[in-house]
Length: 440
Image 1: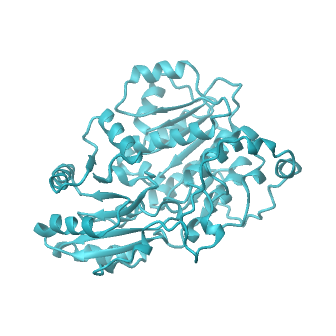
Image 2 (image 1 turned 60 degrees about the vertical axis):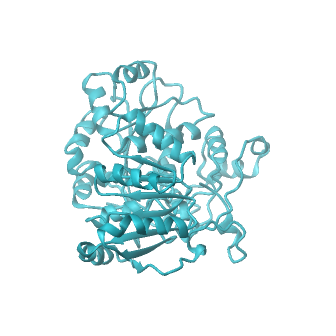
Image 3 (image 1 turned 135 degrees about the horizontal axis):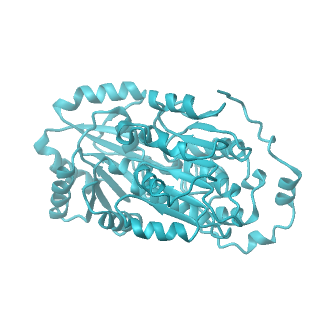
């Protein structure tokens, strides 16, 4: 394995300089969204100061990046994009909510040839919701590139996916079971697919998807590039990396596991007091949007019903729902049509809803990894948020163990939570201009 320190000037070329200082009239014609002026933490602002133009990207791709509202690369994008563009395998560890999707989708789209009508890149993610979200980002980035992007997941009509592949696509975003099904039916021809991205690799290499990725890689050409992204690095990821990655460039931005912008609290309660406590939190907190986690699908539905009876708008989502219903709930919540979402751990992987500033663990998880992914739904892209854990007597040992494993502090909840810890502050006089810049 190779680990290097990247000089920010290494990947500048004359072409890059020309892009930067040459004809900038094209930028003035772009439909750029309003700036996100919320305060951001060093999780996304602690960069070398690179610009997207310095990566020598095609202009149509740059147009998509800027029209998405991304002004400057985040630390993981700064580290991964230039290495991926020279064709190296990558093992990257970065916190959830720091721009990982852009770190792999930008180099993938840059290297796709839109004149060639075959599958050139495959992005595999563990959940259907994450697949839909990732495909939407890729479609938006590639809007000026004439690249055809397709998403395929379980729970949707297989015949429709077969028809779409026959119409020729160049980039596929998929969940493991569905893409293997399409390969086995000899519909998805991967013989010329030279780029494979594994997002949330620790989940993809867990027992839930046992052996599936080995079967996928068997169908790829020998000369291929693998980009592997994972917030945690269990033994399964290490074994897979040693088996399939070739002299990978390692990026580790995980000096600490939890996002800097998320303040964590616990409240000791009895099980029968939980709903009352939740009602109190709703009345006292300035919630933009909240995600509330339960440990079972049955409890998800029961709690959503209770919250609705209390008079609050509430959606729920879990893995046993029909896919069309899940898609509608996910879309409407992201669109801001409802303030509160109750869910199972289906929703802990990579789901990016920028407006969420409060996460509540109605049921406390048993695993540190689950806890990490849950609270990472708040404080996305360096923004501020809070995580509140309702802890019963039986949870107390799990609380201390998870706190220790993650090297983090979960504080007792105060009578009044300072709004400055989680309420967006666009005009904070103490924030720097750099903190107030960019990107969702």
